[in-house]
Length: 391
Ligand code: ATP
Ligand code: MG
Image (cartoon, rainbow, N blue to C red; front, side, top):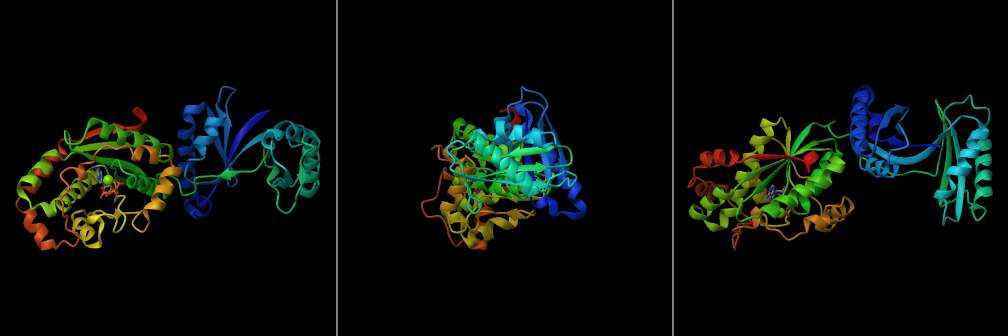
């Protein structure tokens, strides 16, 4: 019996004239995601992408889990493929469906024909398949109103497919369809979630992490690389760039008033991010900021750090509560890594009384005590690049 994965496309189907382009991005991303699980042929008919294992050595369980993380699909099912002939369909249904019905009490059968040449109506076919299932799983009861599981047979162009219903896909639109963005990736909870959310809206990611060695440790950096690796199952592979802020932080400590320290540091971060983003053709910066969460994320603090970047800054977490962000981070599996207790460069030399309502004039006055351009150039020169595919 041949088992395949059916992926129902989401918003992509609404894309009118650009639909082909969206679909090819989507299928490319799916191919990439399935690569570790064997050789799959990916193609599409109607609003569905099919992933078909080329041989018996494919890991279809692994592939199914990976496909669930590909943005652009609303639902996925594993299905058995067979000839468009009643005998074959019933045999396949009888063999394939029972394992999805263990522990289930009620079900119904549903049939759909996109190939209307099939010589039975959909209700007739559904009744036959339902009968076959009942014979194999006599403990089941039919419930047409509110079944626990709906088994389906679909008669399509090339073949018939039998499956036990779908699971939710990752939603969103294909990575790459909205261009590229540079994510400021700390080791915290929020920024991986922010990256995930923008990738779900089609942004291809690139990341930038700031370290402050030896004030931050090698392990803090490794933690960030692990987070990137987990995210890449959704976003596809990306580069993680690392820049050292050590000297900037030392100079800030030496020259600037303590209460402006974090704000000035964040202005450096935004400038460096803007510069890297432009170099690497990114059209936006992305941060995990959430309004009012900490002193540097008040409206006035953001007002002071935002203007140093020319590119638009996307802050998908800005209106979310911490609890909501945590929920997403648990779901995408970054939470446990994010809470590992390593220091971040923002927590090194944290002022005792940070300015929550900074005035731009005072910020500039403090900033002018430093040679901003020289410090920025020097920091930029520390850039190192890692790739999630090498981790
Ligand atoms: P997170 O949970 O994402 O670390 P946070 O609540 O700790 O966020 P901040 O430390 O104020 O908040 O950082 C706000 C945002 O600035 C982060 O979401 C991230 O986008 C960026 N950022 C902070 N520290 C770093 C860093 N070391 N490297 C890169 N970006 C950073
Ligand atoms: Mg942080």
